[in-house]
Image (cartoon, rainbow, N blue to C red; front, side):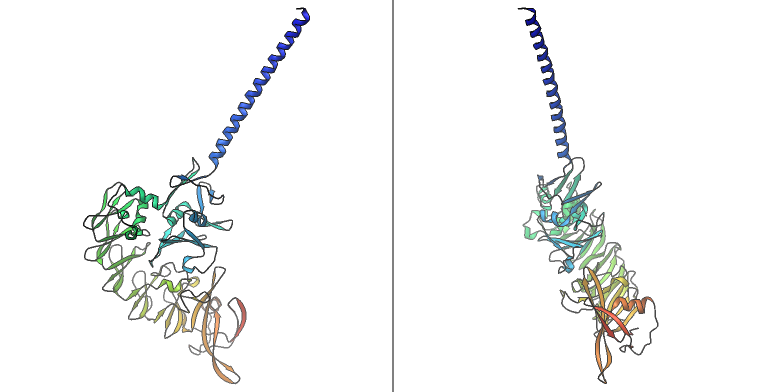
Length: 489
């Protein structure tokens, strides 16, 4: 082998070493890139929001949730549908409306309703006339034309448990059925172990709060907490959980009802044949003995004596009138009826107005009349419609007279979610040289602006006579001119 051969071998060896080093560097770079890519994939996966319902991973649409900082908002209708509920536009009380600023969800057991910009929602158990109202942490908001509510508001509406684990970016949900199953094995004497037809849905909802209604061998009921500790002894003929007030209504063997708190303390002794809370803020209760109704406070003290045939109005007659509480109007007055005559008390039990009325509210048609809505209250002015001898007037919630009882009717028309109020009256007019009676319609806002708010003095002839003037009137969303301006003072 000569010198040239040795040099060639040495050159080839150097090239091989360079090539190996290059390949090694490339491999290392590729490994680093793969590691970075894997790390990125893991973190992207971690950043993706995940949903776990009853311990199962669930797929969901991209607009199901909206995260605002640490606050989780949930698409009400879409999430309710995912959980097996029906979902609708509009308010449940006015369910013929398609107003997208309200929505309600329903199951075979219960209905829950939400409103845009409201931090209050309400629920109603099927086949029960009472509505229960709940406060939620943040008002309902609109995102891309759809209503979203915070997780606490959604949990109340669906009777479930919802937890947002920020560290794992996972939403955990437990349905009421899942919660129920967890308690069945632990409490064999719980009422949820009975056949479904015998289960009181209200008592099933108590499980969400860690409260278990149990039944003894001698058919008496009590309450345990989730740790198996007795809260209410098993000595009552029946017990019903009231979610809205977070308390229990108990009934004795003698058929007398009272109220116990969820920690077992007696709030109201069982002395009544019927009892239910009518104001959470005031802690007022409607009570009944011998078919006579009254109002007491949480200490059992009388607010209104038990001597009335009815307290509160039939809310179903005024389902388009946005009445929050059929027992206490404008947080100020309580309508009561005795011997078919209505009167009003303030929240301290003092009579607001001495006059008694044949009617409270004006019923223009059926309960589901979609054209002219029945009216009890005028929210903008805290007005209340009252009636005598088939004529109507309007008073304030403090008993001040707005309009004398001379009207033929008071009604509202809802357009694009806004209520417009109208009054009708009969007046004498001259047609073809003869005096005849003619019914006219007047926009209530216009009347209040001209005669109530500004306190204008208007000539008075009598309760049914109207002065001649020309006004513009809006009715049924069309402008028309009505001759003879109303003088109802």
